[in-house]
Image (tube, rainbow, N blue to C red; front, top):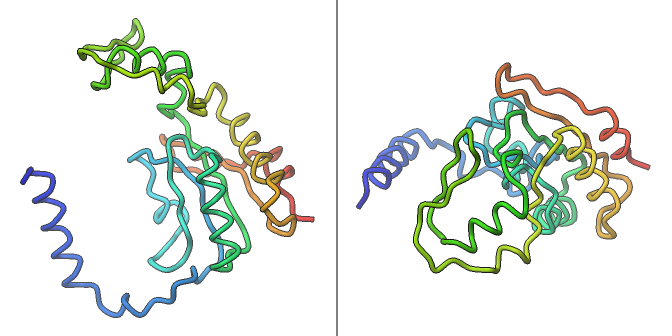
Amino acid sequence: MSKIVDEVLESNRAYQAEFGDKGSLPLPPGRHFAILTCMDARLDPAKYAGLAEGDAHVIRNAGGRASDDAIRSLVISYKLLGTREWFVIHHSDCGMELFTNEVISELLHDSLETATIDENGWHDHGHGPGSDEGKYINWLTISDQKASVVEDVKRIRSHPLVPKAIPVYGYVYDVHTGALIEVPEATEAGRAS
């Protein structure tokens, strides 16, 4: 096994030893809300939103974007598990700001290996074959954090499976200070009716 696998399994054994009565937590989230946020490793929703196990649903993807699958998860969170409020939380200094659909499609066309970035842009050091499948995906890249939060809240709000009674709040998490900064236009667009 890899060193990472060993570390994860060792951490899990320590977690199990302190698990206590968490096995009896109910399936629905106790605080009845969900957060859609980025997968960035610098974000810890449990800490920045004061969560404990069982409190809320946290849906994470690249950029915290309201993709079809993220909306699917939010709808399940509400319809089957009773969440009543949703947060869309993007963050400063996001990797999704570092490329466009065209850039990632070209990199994937060249190879499927990991690319690197420097002051001159992205570079693919891998060897083909790559794939042209990347050009058929909207990668939901970001050019303006606040605008993307507004776009995602509006996308959620306008989805036919999202009830109008659920408020959707929009925030940007500052990775340098830990602050949640409201995007008022997003929260207004996500107002329950």
